[in-house]
Image (tube, rainbow, N blue to C red; front, side, top):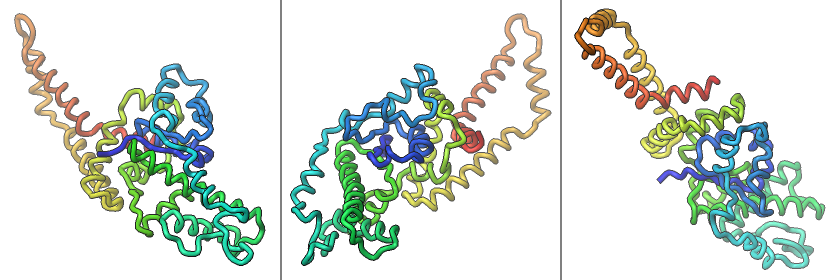
Length: 316
């Protein structure tokens, strides 16, 4: 079953790029956005980064506030568990220090996916700073804290998803953690139908938040979301194959619309004559032809609404 919920870690909430762009994609796609509320952050606080939020109509504000939820309101999580686990490993020399002078700050023989990911992030951070190893105590603490923060975020997402299945809006460090854990033997699904949506429409920066809210209110996006999910499922979650299939579906739908719009002057003339024939009361041909035209438009909407929505999102 496809999850229409997503989780945003505390790190993601601090990311300006997430709040200004990616959050638009999430808000449009998902029915529920769960955010990490370690500090008991309110919905209003979470939405502070939404440009123009204070100027929204009460209805628009209600749609936004209904879509976001603190994790603590939806699942039972012991937020202190991670810190307790770390505390058991900490001694007066730090964590996870070892060596004659406690100069080493990684796991010598990683035994779990978490430990392997922790080490991998430390190597990444060292490379970012252009050093083979950190020597300064402050630098070590910063690196350890950053690595531990990302690993713990992934761990919390797993706990949350066990109770309430959701897609993780992983930031760069968190994505690295999940990849390392996967190679270590822990399998987390890094791709979902949302991945296909994001690959097709990588940014909605060109749309104002008010436009996003109106799309959500009018519920016009669901046909497109269903199309993405069908294409993704039909291609067994293979992103490249799903992208190719979606492109093919766009071309086929465009051809069908073009064919349905082909001029048929002879048919139009006959229908016009029938619709205007004089009758003592109501012209039955006029009613029949009107119903036929209405049914055709409904059929077109059912078949092609997703395509019109996709074009609108790309071109607005």
